[in-house]
Amino acid sequence: MKPMDDSTPTEPLYLKTQIRLMKGDAIAMGPGKAELLAAIAATGSIAAAGRHMNMSYRRAWLLVETMNQSFSEPLVLSAKGGKHGGGAHLSPLGEQILTLYRQMQADVEHRVAHYSTAFYTLVAQEAALKPD
Image 1 (tube, rainbow, N blue to C red):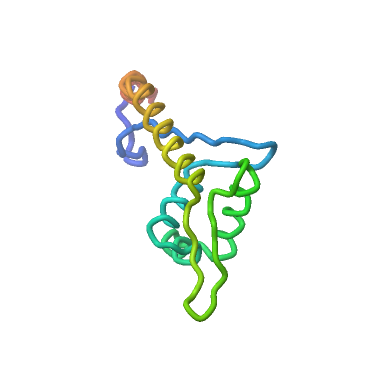
Image 2: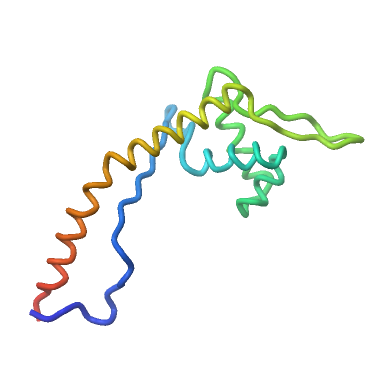
C-alpha cells in the first residue's frame, strides 16, 4: 500500500447541502434563488442583483418569474423604469420565504455536520490504504 500520490487533491473534505423546493419540474426555491432574493433586497433592483451574481438581467428576471409563479403570491414586486427609474423589492411573502429557507438550510447543515467526521475518517483511511 502506498500513500496518496501527488494528483490526489489535498482540499479538506466537507459536506455541502443543497435544498431545492420543487414545484413540478421547476425549482421554486434553492440556494441560487435565495441568494438572488437577498441581493434584490440589498440592492432594490433585479438588474443590480443579477450583476452582483454575475448573471444577465434576463437570467435574473427568469428566475424571479419562476419564483413568482411558484408561490401563492409574488415574492418579488417590481416597478417599471421611468423618470426616476424602476426598482424591485421583496414582498412580505418573499421576505418570509427567504427567512424560512435560510433557517431550514442552517438546520439541515447543523443536523448533518456530525456526518462530516465519519466521512472524513473513511476517506482518510481509504486514501492511506490505496493499493500499489
